Length: 356
Image (cartoon, rainbow, N blue to C red; front, side, top):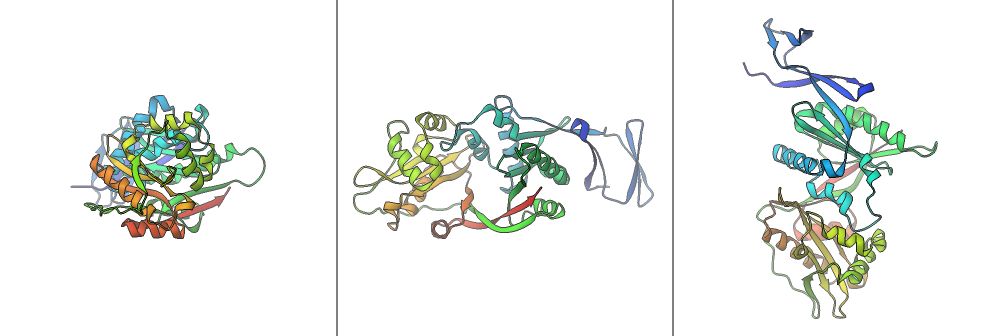
């Protein structure tokens, strides 16, 4: 007889352990007996499950030791689910290698927690930042633990508080992600509505011919020699990129997802950069994203946004991308109009918030 399986669990908070037993979906009662589980089913058949009780344990993350393991975990969960409800590998790598903002500090490893099952390996990754933004990335066989992951993230967020003020904690959830929506509803989170979009490029998408205004051209960047123009155009679109340094730019260029031929710009007639797009692609999974994308305010309404995105897509396709997405794309009118016009499918991402 073929049984569908689910998981019962209990939490030992003192040791960050979860003990769980895999049992039949039939009505049952289970008793632990001599390292086995005796199951009485609804149809009065008796089974002895010879699978030992397993342990799910949370531990700290260390970039040098665990980065490749998490990349493999993210790729494997994508292959199993064929969804992007978890991050893709390049998004996790960008935690350290993003070119804007402040340099990554070793202490930031503590924002990430790894959950492992004995004999299985990584089954979940949880992330909580001081801002209150949290994520729980889960293997599909462990969806039942969603409530435990969120409860742990809430505790982590409380520990990050530096005063007695209210702490907001929030999750960005794609509409229709029933696993995460159910957990957050049960924990009394408030769906605050659409905050951003996830964008998906249809398979076999054909890039149309690109036409630029007279005097404009497209090329890839030399991130060091072009640094001042590179910083200027990104800073004009994203305020946190004003603080970009040569050192951060060099580190960005050393990321596994980065390739200089996929970091493209539109050059204006005066030699400055008018638009930019980077095609980030994990070299193992070939999952890719067009991120970041922007047009300098002085050069808008000329079709440069669509042109630079098309060029980014074309180069990702040349490099063998298996899927091209923009997870967390801006939901502004301008961004929505651009990505709709390019041909990306759109799915709403809602912000779920709670004050703890």
